[in-house]
Length: 185
Image 1 (cartoon, rainbow, N blue to C red):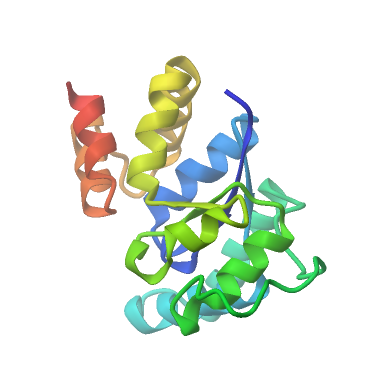
Image 2: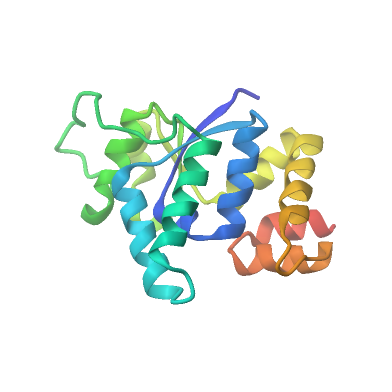
């Protein structure tokens, strides 16, 4: 299986469980993760709005750690502009398509699939998938590596530490239902 080049939407970065697993997979060489300044800004706004227990300083620290894990992830839009007549995405999310295209991504990972037109993205050689579709597929293709990455993420949790069943439950709450179900079978 060739290394996937993923562009992560803000809703994927918002979820700590999903974000940490994807970064761990990138560190393991199973994928390359990309994002843009606009995606980071959306993630920041969502975290500060939904999680009052997280300070702006903590978000900055998180983004710095993400940058250390994936130093080439921040994508600048340098490729030629997209053909404008084709509606690739909801107008509020077209920046994701532009950045994914500029990053030479193969897949946009998002929990908001309805915001992207898969048929139009195919003309750009881009796919759009939920992390809960992509991760089980990767698990099937690379079981030992993915299981190791999941366990590494679980063991890294300290406040509180999580048992394997509790970690599976956290995955379900994070929108990784299919992955957690597959792992529990």
